[in-house]
Image 1 (cartoon, rainbow, N blue to C red):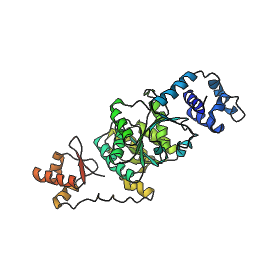
Image 2: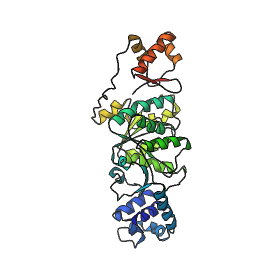
Image 3: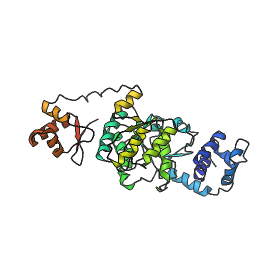
Image 4: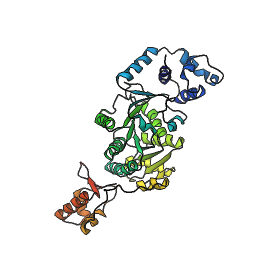
Length: 356
């Protein structure tokens, strides 16, 4: 058998993730040795040895390899040059990565953007303001392709002309949730990358996702949390990231919002506050210049007056009528001017928001 077979077999054995990683370290990443007689360096883990002695699923291992070949899925091992060093250094690194897309993204600086599945308009605006500058700074945006904040982060990375990595809690060939199948295709079409440690065909069992979150945290230089309830999975990711020594940024949310309870609690516990991408760049001493040709035009006094009413939450037309005191025709003219000058945007629900 080739070495890849032993790594896949190790990934299938049901023992703690940290034990798998440490066994590989102690064999100098030679997984084949785990099926030989164990030397002194492994005897401290002897309680797990019977899992290897009793392993009989070599036919399944062969099917996994064949399926990867048939579906153009790359198998990346910790011994491969493509395996990211930043991930390999964490205590419970995945013993195999199944990948579809551009492997070069594994070598880039990654910034994770995570948050609630129950995204509010405020959360969408935050992602739309933060992700484009991060992309411009050269970061690859990493997230979990879940509905809500994760999906919005991937979409904005693509829209901004950047690269993005989706880490799945299913097999790499199983778009999840189903509603994000189009996003899955868009990521691959736009030179992105889909990765998973679960074998092809694996469904989205609920216990897979906390396990998946450690890869999101481990792969990234830093994590940005945008909205998260009291028990949000994004808080798990943030906690893992902190344990790995990664920087954790959080965007404060309204105190009356259920999906801001968790993220505001993160801030109380010491996460770095980020009210704009400038806060992140200041932490890393980065200076991001405006892209050529993206300069904004001069606007009229009335349009500027409308612009000054905006905050991160966004407004619909009726709210703006009340806030500005303008007539409808005058307001719509100013909004059109601000859109053309790229100061504001408008979503599918008719909400106007500040552009990042």
